[in-house]
Length: 212
Image (cartoon, rainbow, N blue to C red):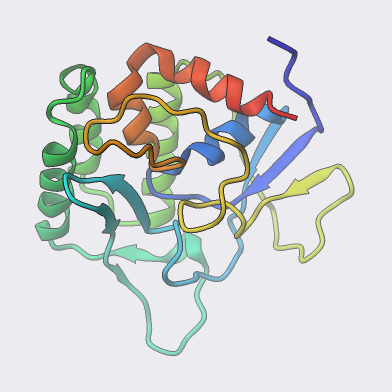
């Protein structure tokens, strides 16, 4: 395996159970900076992720509280207090991955974080990221932007608004065995890789990160 190319600093947005490209990018760069001062954008990975269900790709969306017609920082967005969406998300995850080989091992950690009484979307996403780093054995410190810069410094690689399942995959994803279907679906939520590949998930992401 060739060494991971280091270009110094990755600037990226905070996302809900991010896609595989997101983690490959994190492994590729030396320093990780999460954008904290952007305005919230609807219909993005900030509050949605994609998993593979029995008959279709399923979108899981977190309902958020946002003043109508007003700009507000993503870091200030509050999550709807209802428990309904959490139950729906967890039920969808169980249905999709209960038969995955590593579901029983990782499910308790994912369930506990999902049902933790988070109020702030940004903080929720960061705590999810920290949990996933632990489960994937990724040693990476998380830093935050100090202000919003339209054009970041030259040593910063800007991937804000460029990574997500609905976007074209950044890398070529080699197939791994998924729970449903004969056709491999690349770049789903990290949950798909974690439940299907377990302790081999990090190796998969490192190989993805090492692509030229």
